[in-house]
Length: 284
Image 1 (cartoon, rainbow, N blue to C red):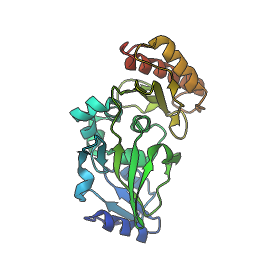
Image 2: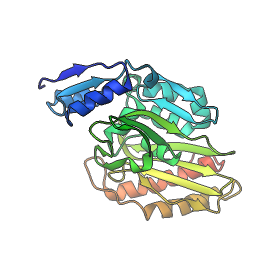
Image 3: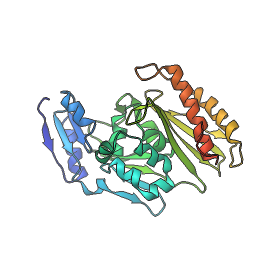
Image 4: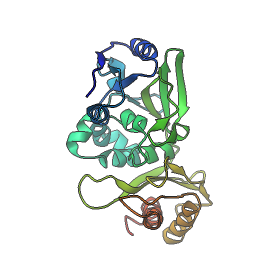
């Protein structure tokens, strides 16, 4: 491990100034589960900026309008265990619970999982399908960014060198809104996703949406299936969603699975999620 400077600011403003002064050589420490491995491999940073002391970054807040705001330092396990999140946004809670082991989830953060931008991240499909956005702070001020536009490649995002994510925001759902997450991995335990997916059904709009992860370098956002109601046939609707999804993914072969297998599993997840959201339970 090469040497680096360590700073622990008390405010977001102090953190952004440190990032700006490092000219691209700084990295954020929140949970550290990805960063510490990278540092051990003698990569990345001349400066590590530990943001865990900044109070507002450790909070889960529900606004009066019903939006959910998750601070950048909130552990993944807190999101998975939160009763209101599990009730309103089960896809997010399920995606959070699918990450690694309990020990990893107790340290890792949702903002860190997103900022690491691994194609197999389990929180991205739920948050994208839920219309999530990021609150981002930098030396030039703050901005909100749709999460769907945040990822640009493997471990690459739209964050500037002097910026950090301060919160993940999920807008209040419309009446009757349903959502769920599912994942295919090689076996039981803490394995990475071969394919993961989150779907959302809005009965008022008559739409069923799915976002697929681990099937490309960034989450695959499939156009909404329209004309869907709670009375729609779950089997036929699931087949329609699967066919639509397969038109919009281009999975690759790698050490964990072939592209052909990923396509088959993506279709399976579309069918499973449709059956769950249209009231037919979890089935294959």
